[in-house]
Length: 317
Image 1 (cartoon, rainbow, N blue to C red):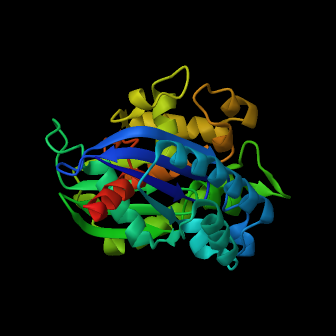
Image 2 (tube, rainbow, N blue to C red):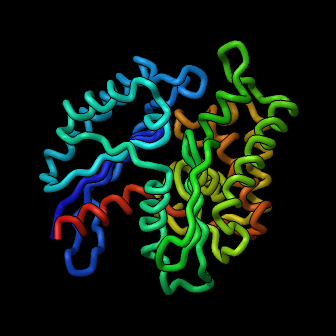
């Protein structure tokens, strides 16, 4: 076995996976998987810079993760930084901080690389499952961007577009420094228009409507699944490979965009860091399902982290 660690630092959250990889099969056995909401992308869409308080939240999580990685004795570590750090003028401050804490320089990966890792992580376990026809369309709805990948056993086409739950919320739902609670119809319409324009861009590269199975990744999608199942708490085992119909996604999206902060916060499976941005994330998922005609979304807890861990283990062989 090769013990590997992967860290994925996105716009809204930073996540860690420590796993043992079988060198013969590439199969991963999780040892530790955790997520922290750090909102690294706070204000980036407006200022073009990473905020000092956002950096400190992220570095605090990195220090926690460094202790976990050391405790498990991981032999290899890969750190990927996604949308927020790609966009920021002061990303060098972020890079130096991560290097000091974890001893590796973060790879500020491109949208296409992010899409490839997400596809590998999400689809490796799906082969042979009943009623899951190829090609797959994997959508990773992040904080700052959404990745679209179509493929069978390998990536055929991929595109990253700049719509994510944090970026859309800050762009359309914030007024005088606070999130409108609940948003107005005009705000939701403007957000939807932004999403549709991004889908037009994605379709220039990725044949979205050719896919036979839609696979959804990341916190917005998994939270929608948790709500659909009325889970008493967030339960990864119940969420992984669950299926949510388009009609149910529409119901949940509509409710999230009509509800108040207090009503959303009262959902037992809702992470506190997602309360203000989940409406935007759910709307992105709904728009994708309506554009592609997908009757359901297959929800995966395995995503870019797993793809990075698979690649890390392959490089060790």
